[in-house]
Length: 331
Image (cartoon, rainbow, N blue to C red; front, top):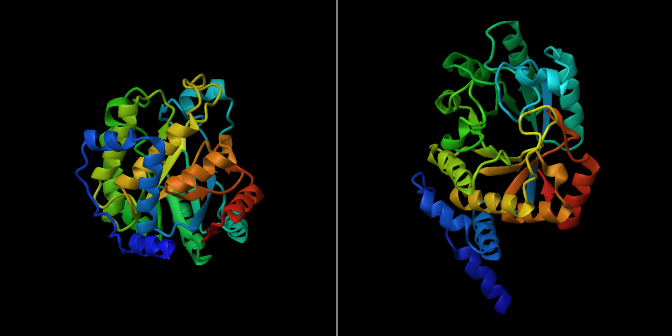
């Protein structure tokens, strides 16, 4: 009887209102809650606003590798570090090859297929026409299509929308204050402008960040605050932990503690209750227990497949087994 009344009481709780005016102090207060209290609060919000028994599986394919003119200090694909990372640059993949991979991803349970290309901005040439064809073909497979191709203008965003693109990924990476210490070839305002162009075209926004870059706790709060200012909030928020890559300026950075990742996910869930939080790069370094804590804290999507752009990811069968063991179905 008692259990029934508790469940009834929880079901009657209303979902929290969406806010776009969070202050640094408010977010910091949430972030610094005792961990178990933070987890309880985040999970309560998650259950109210989302189906916490479902997980979206997204597959990511690099369709054009390396030779990027940007100097992002974490990235092996930057031309600035090509001599030290020894990453082999590859031209844009052929349409048929990409769709073959999309079909495989779908057969293994992926609901969203994401394509990435190492460009500073989308070139207005036949490469872009190929991308548009790829998007149309992915959508014909009844999959969501996401792309991360660098900066784009209003016209390109409209073309992608007409092709059927579901979402465009353009991460803010970190706080506005710390951003300049990681990237000098593109301004924070440039990233926000691309997101604005995506939103104006009617494409959903996928935007998050990376922790482990050497940022402070306040920088992590600043990232959440910047994302929460976007109206509406990004439909998808990838949370990445740095995978230090040999030959990049951040190769010696210390690994992020799983507890810090859980705190960030829980805080993000409370501040942006209805956004899909995607547990992304660095997941292969987490134990199963740490991943489950991330799911409890509000992460409801994972990148699925053995490679994320140029870094290793979890094995698909292991992911499916873990989800089955904890009673979460994939969409």
